[in-house]
Length: 316
Image (cartoon, rainbow, N blue to C red; front, top):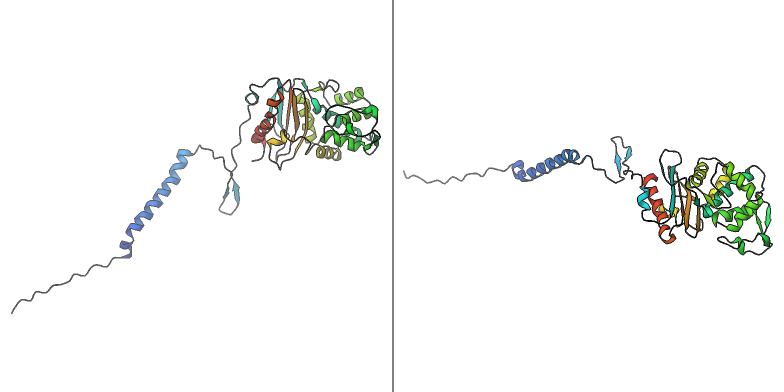
């Protein structure tokens, strides 16, 4: 019987799903292991790095945790004014906290129009005690005309009528020189006004000489911010008039636009000053007085110092 040559075809084994996807599975496992390695390795290597970010995080129960940006260190005032001519007095102080920064705080400086702040406080105290009626009329007299410096009152015709409340508003918002003289006159003159200023605890402040220290000017704003010196009504009227003044290029320029800055500025030859309250979530007082400075160089420093103070004490 002839032997038949039979060719038996071998059946190709069927690939399983696992075998078909083995390469993909290997890649996925590799990526997972790589990710886990990064998660557990990087925090140990870079755990001390501070991220200057503010991003939301969530707990397992859905509550939002805010990661705050790192707080900027206390500014170095000497570095900020390095190379500047003249003298600087600077005070930065938290209203309710312990943070404080000061330089030359007890040096007597030319106050310029910052000297009007104690005059305004004494005026409002007289209003609060009933000694002055803010609705009483002042009739502009030629003898009172003050032909110097800032303010619109000096340009008005004799016989023009104002209430003392309106005069005080001009003194605060425009830094009206003639208006300040009218208020001092209504307080009984320079001698009596000076006595009232001294009763505020200001020993070095001198109305006639136009001098005070940054500790005195800043201290007045600190007391006002803490609800002292004036009734709430007078305090808020003063604050409203010291906001959005005719000069917002100094302290206010160093903070965000939506933050209220209550401040009194002052200027004259060799002097650029500004003192006030920055109403951050945690408010603080900042005061800068200068004497014999180069105005063109010193004036741009005020918003820079204000911005440095905001970075230190302002909102996150």
